[in-house]
Image (tube, rainbow, N blue to C red):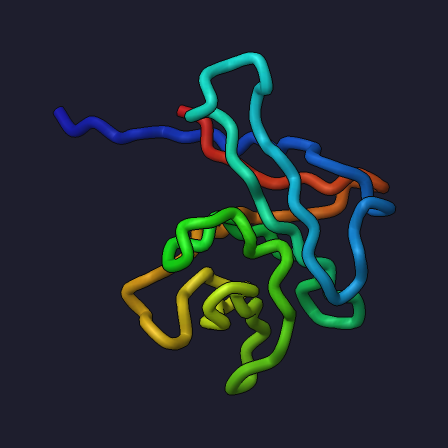
Length: 127
């Protein structure tokens, strides 16, 4: 008998639209603040009005600098792709898939993000 893992996507409200800064990043803590810290994560949200995709959510942890700074990065277009550059070592991560332009073996986790009225939500898989 074959076993199939079934996951359900849960949308978590993490902030309000008014908390976002156009063409820039903000940081939000996702997860239960009363549980083990491994259950919490810092997410960088980027609101780019006027684009086909206006809202991006990526991990705030910079794997090269080993610091939670991605939300402070500068948003720019590199080779036709929207990116955020790390404020420490200036490497670029694509907002669409989290891949580092300078070293494709390095990537940020990416989360589906959406507006629900005035709430900003990200999707996480729950088993």
